[in-house]
Structure formats: structure tokens, C-alpha cells
Amino acid sequence: MNFKPGDEVELIDENLSGWVEDVSGSSLTIQTSDGFILQVESDEVIKLENASLKVTEAELRQALKEKQPSKRKQVIAKRREKTIPAIEIDLHIEKLTHRVNRLDKYDILNLQIDTARHHLEKAIKNRNQRLVFIHGVGEGVLKQELRTLFSRYNQVAYEDADSTKYGFDAATAVYIYQKSIS
Image 1 (tube, rainbow, N blue to C red):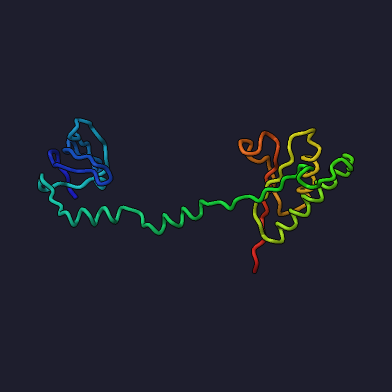
Image 2: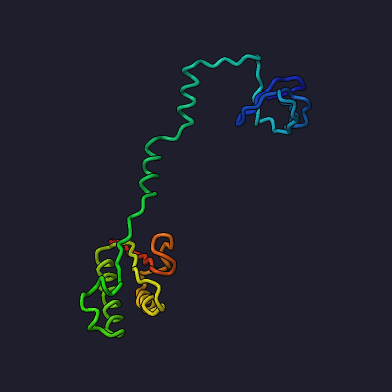
């Protein structure tokens, strides 16, 4: 479209209108109704033939409807945002057995590791995706042994669990990556 100085124009993608001040090839210098000077390309504006552009209410509703994203897409996005809650396994010895007084440190550690292995393998078999092993802070021996155990599984990744929920360095989150069934 040919533009000349004095033509009233409106930007296509923005709610700005004004008048053409200068034309240089396909580049236009526009003074907006607010008094700002803009450099735009001619394909970014439309020429207003009549100073009062008339749009019916039905056309306005249709344009607004086309601009809004569909509700179905929003529902799908919300569904994907939900995460499956983690299965929590508390490895504190008093949660695992009532015979705490009869066990030495070696037996306690073995019971905790065996319990963790059992729950991890069960989760892999049942195709669970997330576990949290609550081990407490202590001297860090159980945490280190758990990480050694987890590193033996190819489909397992682990990291410190949420410190606001479990306490600083008191739990380990485990993520199980399942192979797809073909």
C-alpha cells in the first residue's frame, strides 16, 4: 500500500495510531497521537481511510474469541503440571523394628540398607517414579551407604530431598526412570 505524509495509520500489533510524517522506501516515520515518533515498516501498519473505524459488537466478540486460547489446551497443561507424590520410606531404626536394644550399629545399618533395597526394587517393579528415603542427619553413614546402593541402578537418579519438608540433609529423593513397554 502506498503511504504519504499526513495519512492516518494504526499499528497492527499494538494499540497505537497516528499520522505518517515521512516515507522512505518501505519505512515510515509516524507521530503517534501521544506525540511519540516511531520508525516502522509499511507492513506493520494499516491506513485508516475513515477517521472513525466502525466495528460491530458481534465482530468484536468474534475477534476476542479467536484471541483466547481454547479451554481444552489449558486443562491439558494443568494435568501435566501435577506431579505424582513421592512414596516416603522412613529408615529411622525405631520405625523398622521394636528390638532396637538387641541390635548393634552394624546390624542396624544392614537392616536399614536391606529395607531401602527392598522398597527400591519394589518401586522399580511397580513402575513408581519417585521415592523419598528419610534417613536423618546423624554422622552421614546411612546417607552415604544409600547413595552407594542407588548408584548401582542404571535407571535411578538421586539428590537431597526438599530441606523445607524433611530438614537439611535428612532425606534423599530418588527418581526412577522407567523403560517404555513396547
